[in-house]
Image (cartoon, rainbow, N blue to C red; front, side, top):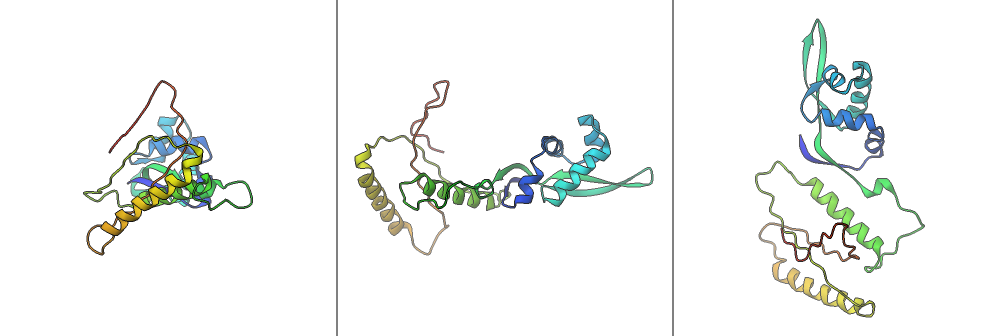
Length: 194
């Protein structure tokens, strides 16, 4: 079972549109038969089997084994991942064309989609997945935004020049700036590092 399954096909998203299938997926965090899941969800085995088959067809559930029960072959199924990420491409965006301007939210959405796809494609079973996350809050006046972007680009270009050689582990670096809206309950995170 993978930690994360990145959903890029519309059939996968459609398979999750029914709340009953989410319940079935939760039960299949551990391997179970349709009969076992049906008992836990107080459903008929036939109804659960129908949902499991749709989830198998969408690649969200795997048949991990089979056993004979009273002369009948019974499949044992397990969810393909512990969590699922839905590609923003599946949701779609309204409007004719997004601006490709680096100061636009459309550009930020494209960047986040790329990061999401890259992280989902990592081998989460690998013994060590080195990563660095830095988060913080800055304040930039509207008239200073172009200058800030130029400074940020120069800083990043310096990093790329210094560490852009052919040796060592390859990392993708993405920097995103977006409006910060404090969360309710007074949560305020400044200068987080992970």
